[in-house]
Length: 76
Image 1 (cartoon, rainbow, N blue to C red):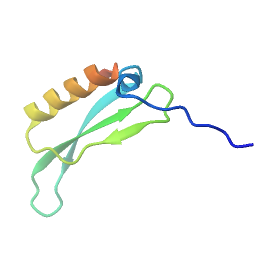
Image 2 (cartoon, rainbow, N blue to C red; image 1 turned 135 degrees about the vertical axis):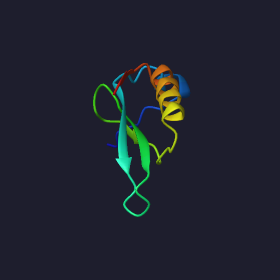
Image 3 (cartoon, rainbow, N blue to C red; image 1 turned 120 degrees about the vertical axis):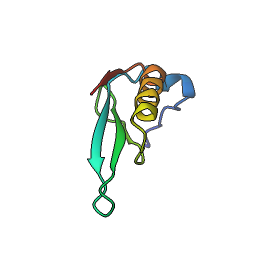
């Protein structure tokens, strides 16, 4: 007997919960600072990591939008 997978819809993403974190990093070649945004769902089964973002204000705004969309809280 095969198990059926439940379909996932866009509205389901809003109930993931969890945390959104912003981390600073440093480019090894240029030495410039960049930021990454990570989201881990409440259950830990869904995770996301952004590409490097060079502007801190833009990273903060992106984290706020992601947190609102997933029903998460932002931690720095």
